[in-house]
Image (tube, rainbow, N blue to C red):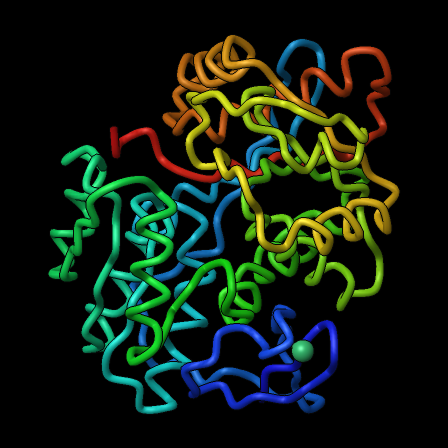
Length: 329
Ligand SMILES: [Zn+2]
């Protein structure tokens, strides 16, 4: 396996410090036929269940990805990334996420015996870093804005391996497993409704089903308060970012934006936005059914309710992955 630049096709090794091509292009994973990551590190990954529930008159197949070891689907990415890093003999990594990705990478690094440093803005609430701390990761609090943290992580990545959930294609190689699971459980759905920030789940869904050979239509859901991908597709300029309860998808500058747009368009899918009120309402519906999820999972369901309210027929197979547990807050 190697990294290949999406822009100029230059080849880079998996174990180098380069996380992006010298030309500025992002990496994709280049594999020989049949080549697989040898996984020896496990935290007890499960094939997450699918529950069929009638919600606002629409039958949704809810894929319970909050049942992964650290409480979110990000474990799919961390599992493959960290296993490959262990195989490569990498002993120390840096990453920057205060959310589910940071927890997942910290947990798998703990299991693999890899030293892990998580860079966060100083303003990150203690509650959010509690889980990362528990896994014995070294938390580096960076004064200033999110941009200052981005600068600090890039400095650190000059000498320590960057186990990024955004740049490193091995993470996306891992999130593909959701497509294979859905395929084994219910076949190819007509639609899959995915919340989108950096696109870690969306690109996993797309790449996985592309390998399987049939694409469901991908409905990509962004928060109205932070919708850079939706706005680019709709050619809306000059939007202003505002905070959203769906913090898992509050990404103002998604690095893989063009890849995400291409994936949704190739699937004949659509981008939609939802308001915080719709997110909270959908989360409450799930909670009231005994399904305790984070607001970002509510965003996916809210997107589904919104998209299908005028165009539903009972023959449609619609999957909504529920990204993370409500227990972290
Ligand atoms: Zn390049």
